Amino acid sequence: MKLDYKILWLDDKIKSVVLADYEEDIDELKVYIKSLGFNETIDFVRTEEELFSKLGEVGEYDLIMTDYHLDEINGVSRNGDDIIKTIREKDIFTEIMFYSAQGEVKDTDRLDRITFFESFRVLGNDHYEKIFNKAKDLIELTVRKFQHIVAMRGMIMNE
Image 1 (cartoon, rainbow, N blue to C red):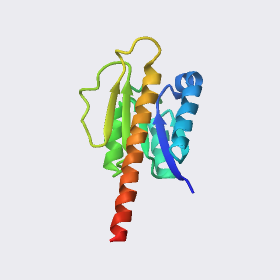
Image 2: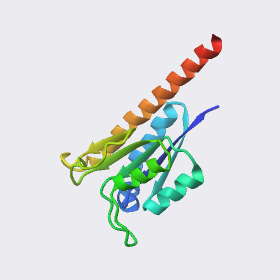
Image 3: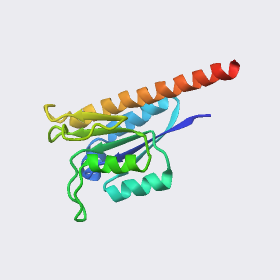
Image 4: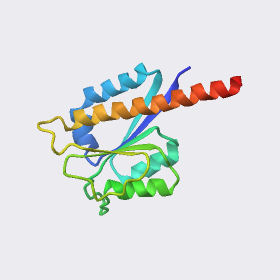
């Protein structure tokens, strides 16, 4: 029996950049999750509306990844921090990873369980490669937390 590890990824350029140019990296991330003993699911969304639809439809995710600087879509322009505040207001406490290649995100509220990754100083086309590496670090952290909880539960049940 394998457990599921689900990622929800919001980026306004998800189709034109991430899915088009980084298919191998996405496959590598999936293989990495499987190597940890999980069934992987990565759901990609382009808008805030799609994000909240998935959160309501699918349920809990283990990691939410989002670009901080989102372009205006359908007349709506909100940065990632506004969206994350809304997620937290809905009592969803999933690990979240912000990333940005356009500048610093210092003006953002530092909410719990959020990782900030700024790659605007990264030279060349390594922006998304660095994002994938950071995502792997967060996945490993989540898995270690889960393994610790399982071990503790076993010890408590044994007592």
